[in-house]
Image (cartoon, rainbow, N blue to C red; front, side, top):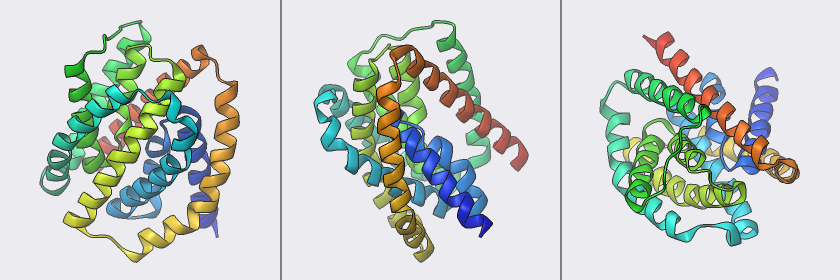
Length: 241
């Protein structure tokens, strides 16, 4: 019973974050899902539920999508996906997480101290590539996008819409890739199915929260999400050695 309550709480909070910011589901859900499921199951549940959120929201927010950046991110991610699955299958994933966490924390601190990035086509492709790589390796495509969009001072509606549209693409590609190379399980799909009603409650609450966030508070949310992600990955990788 305690496990079920924890699962419901994880999915609800993660869904609210994803809906209100465009990020947050994998950042919030993955660490705690790993307490309840094996790594492949946790990553695939994360991907499936994130797909459901993106599909549910995309028709509402399509007017805010920057389709030019979306196209570049998607092309870049296709290049990153096979490298991610290679890392997942053959490289020390703990060491990889530690490296990612340190880079993430350093770059977040730079952003907090007003370091800015200029958006360019080549950088769009590179960020897409890193997101694709992180999706298939550790199930977290969000951090590179979050760093990039925060550094370029992207307006919150455009950030959320473009990110969710990109997630719709990259999570679908990653789910197919994961299943093809590492298989899937009945518990993954049943657990995802049971979580769907909770996800829709989170969608409703997240939409309400999004309307109350001004750009300054939204940016603060981004910093908190980045710092939490980097800290979690660092602690989790150290404890795994």
